[in-house]
Amino acid sequence: MDPCSHKIAKKRKSLMPFGLGETKPKHFRDMVGIIWKNRDNLPYAWKVLGKGVCDGCALGVAGFHDWTIKGVHLCMTRLNLLRLNTMPALDVRLLEDISQLKSMDNAQLRELGRLPFPMLREKGARGFRRITWEEAYQRLGSKLRGLDPRRFAFFLTSRGVTNEVYYMAQKAARFLGTNNVDNAARLCHAPSTAAMKATIGVAATTCSYKDWYGTDLVIFFGSNPANDQPVTTKYLHEAKELGTKVVLVNPYREPGMERYWVPSTLKSALFGTDIADYWFPVTTGGDIAFLSGVLRILIENNWVDQNFISKSTVGFEGLKAQVASLKFDDLERGAGLPRASMQEFAELIRDARTAVLVWSMGITQHLTGADAVQMILNLGLVKGFVGRDKCGLMPIRGHSSVQGGAEMGAYSTAFPGGKPINAANAGVLTKQYGFAIPDWPGLTAPKMVEACAKGDLDVLYCLGGNFLRTLPDPNYVGKALANVSLRVHQDIILTDQMFIEAKEAVLLLPAKTRYEQDDGGTETSTERRIMFSPELTRQVGVEIQNAWLTLESDRAQLETLEKSVASADENDRLVREEYRSGLATNLEVITGHNQLLSARLELERQKYQVKLDWIALKLAQGLLPESENSP
Ligand code: SF4
Image 1 (cartoon, rainbow, N blue to C red):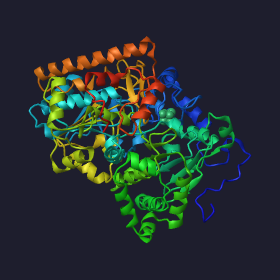
Image 2 (spheres, helix red, strand yellow):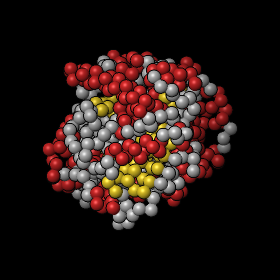
Image 3 (tube, rainbow, N blue to C red):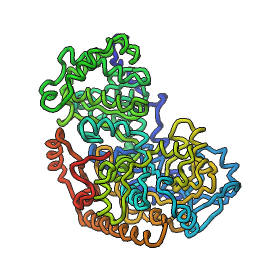
Image 4 (cartoon, rainbow, N blue to C red):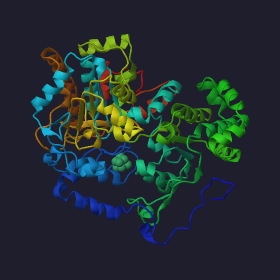
């Protein structure tokens, strides 16, 4: 790299095809390994790939095709997850004494197979014993009965969980009297939600991946899509052919973002694609200082879009005064980069007519994550990189279906559709659901763990996930999880958090994969496409029942819940009939709008010919206010 510039010098390409001799994923060799691993269930594996919506990341693909590229959309992340869908049941005798299992890591535990039966471990027992579903209901029901609804909580993770499960989970939690229901979105993009909602009124991307194609710049802040959303490299390969420049703002020069061999694109598979054009190595957590310096340069030189600022924004003078008050010495120290770097970045922005700004965990998972997101939004807004083709503000999502969790209301601080939790909204929902809805905000995921540590929770129900490995300080988390009377872990595989003793008992419940879900299910992608994944029948273990019907606290309440479940099922059935009657299996829906984007979304609506879908049905029923956006 030229020491005066952040432009990445292109290496001479090796004449060796397929990146032989380079450090890179060995896609073709690894694919053979995947076939071998799934050899006992290859027809089902093929069905999952050919018909299912990918349970990997939130880029979104149904079968082998998406809405961005013409060719095949497939990556090793998806292939590596295949075994979760094809593996047989584990031998539950292994759970009788967990001392051996405790020395295994989560990858090894996953290899043991699918959890096929409800299992219970009482305090002091060496391991779990198999129990019936009836016993499981009894155990959980008797514990919940009469319990203060502030003393139990539900957490749902995001990989594989469908919108329907999120929706029913939040409904069941609220039926039981609590808003203590949260999902994994809290741990990744909650700062994006807060900053975006406050700034532009929409808490999700303002553009689609297609806008990467031919835009002047795609800038990745604190993200590594080559690893986390691998098929983005194919999008970027194609975007670069149209002249797009790729910029990284990241402490680490991610190798996959430097050069990538896209296996399904011949030219790239043979000789690789140089992806990033510029790399700005901010120090860890230095993004706010770096962007403040960039904004100061842009504003001082009037390299901003005054027309857009005056017509579509407020508070510009405040921002101008704020950045003008900052000293470059301080900004350089904070950013870990000199003023010249900020100048170079600002000049790239100056020269760009269009740009898409993309960010993820490297930005959000900091104490000041929401402020860093705010600075990215400020950068986009001063140049009007929103509401136009080839422009956008994109918090790129990780796990599949994480986008939908909060939108469905599995969020402790919002009702379905992002409605704030207050007495008025609780009243509306009470009428619609036919049972009382609490009007107090529930515990967020980290607060649930803190409540466990303080002894404020008696039941913690986790659907998937692993707090031990996703939150900082595993020692603290482990002690907190041990301080709950009853923990329920519903999952398809074993994870090490299940082996932490609880004060009374740990209950393991098996689950269906998204492909096994009765009548299929939907997922919302990063760009808020809603994709339908049909049921691909498979049975592992005894019949795995609908978890959200197991929360019996008394008969009368259960009957009320069953009625509401029935009506939700009826809605889903109607929608799916629409799907099957030829509307398409992959519906494209843009939900949410605000003043800035309404014109663009209207165009999108026409372009994609928005169809009635599950969300739209809820909108029509008034469950999701169309004027509000997801949390
Ligand atoms: S990029 Fe994401 S959505 Fe696409 S196949 Fe890979 S894991 Fe699935």
